[in-house]
Image 1 (cartoon, rainbow, N blue to C red):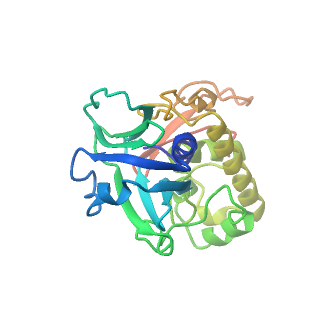
Image 2: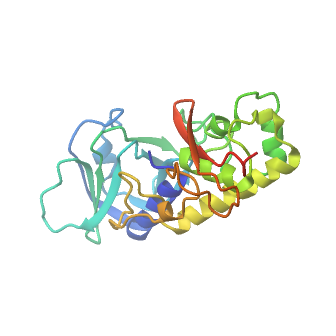
Length: 276
């Protein structure tokens, strides 16, 4: 599933062709994806101008000029593909096609159909069922060592799966949790409540650094992720531990290989010595 850096990359790519532009044509090629499309969805979007595009957690928000917001989630395999309205036939899994007055075509391609599109008003966005229980954004000042220390109090579960809890902090995801814990030198099995204030500050710093570097690299392309331009992301070439089981531990003199274990049904990669 695309994580925060991948979704942020898609948002930035879409902003170039959508922000300030009017939707001249909207075509729905099915009645919904993971959930049905809102009633009269195509009609409500046609003729509207997209004022700006933002991101909340792993959701894209397209703010329209009439006070409504399109909420979009890419699901497991969804992609936004930018092209020109040249009359070419849609691809098999192009489920939503938008064309701007400038002739740019944006296709929501989703082979597994786990993505979704919904709508909310600007005023009701924060209280929407997708957003109401979400924690802070990890790249904002609201996510700091003090906040993390307080949030981990009383949580005896291992820190790695706790970092995936979207009510604690949003968007980190499995890849970036492993990378951040390695960078902070914290073992993924440590009880969350056992982290000291200093360790919480180190972990926050590592999370922010890893996510910022991943965004700058266009995200990580392991399976389905592509930037809207069609380019791959490149952060997978910078992984320190993720998907590197059995390989040497980078920047470490432990002479041990990277290990993998399963936590809460997800693979965790780590160095048993560096993350003591």
